[in-house]
Length: 396
Image (cartoon, rainbow, N blue to C red):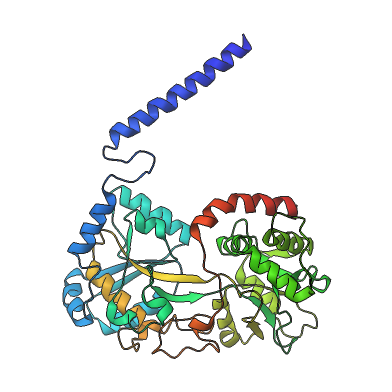
């Protein structure tokens, strides 16, 4: 009797979900089965982009005349720098107000989808990472003004998602304690001298770190070569490849998980330490060298590569209420055609790279000389669950 009741309960649950799916299908006429996207959403997005000249190159003067009629521009950005851009832009273009909102990258993804699918269009300009899913879904459109992109380094000119600026997650060290970089090979992090002295955010919950480790797994051949270069012999594997082997040995060396990049920087950079830790943090944190006078530096010469390149991109939101103001602000933030617009200054900092040949960058190494990995989003999406389970199993 108990089994019969259990089977009946399961049958009722399955029936309920079947009816629910049927109802959703009838209430959301025009949806494509299994995709969650409105049928023809991409076509509508492309038509809107064409009608609003999102893919055209218009001068700042042309855009200003149109933007004055719109009166404002709403920005969804993963950082806070558009608050600084707001001041210079509003001074340059009176009559247009900038409303910047700092929103976490994952929240930007969710918010754009939810609002767009509900027919609500608040955002005009979106400043976030490379987002192929949002572009393919018709939620955002990369902005590609040709007169600005022609000033980019060759490797960046024809990018599908033009890089506004880029950062990396290098290993950071204390320059007061070490007169030069204390490591030169990723495998150095598995040596006993660094046991319990490596700081990072939890890669299970922080995408920037999980992207790094998953990319190491993807580039296991390079990690094997780096191992041989360090130890003079072929690696003996206990894990499925040299990438996972590195991660296993790295975890065995007791890395310390921190709550934020700011905490990592402060722990590494406190003056007066004789034996300070090293750790991972965004290169953008190197601004603290000047802002807080911390003795820190990133390691930009390490085998096999520095880290994963993290690109920030400017997009125009689909169905943006103020598209011309959005394009005008995007041009301002990119530095305009001559690279002199004040809007670029908050992004052109030590630890961040603007990939323009005509803009002086404060970093010692130019953007086109950074030896980094590119994130393979498809590989990451496929491999992250496996990596997550591997990390949890080894770390606990």
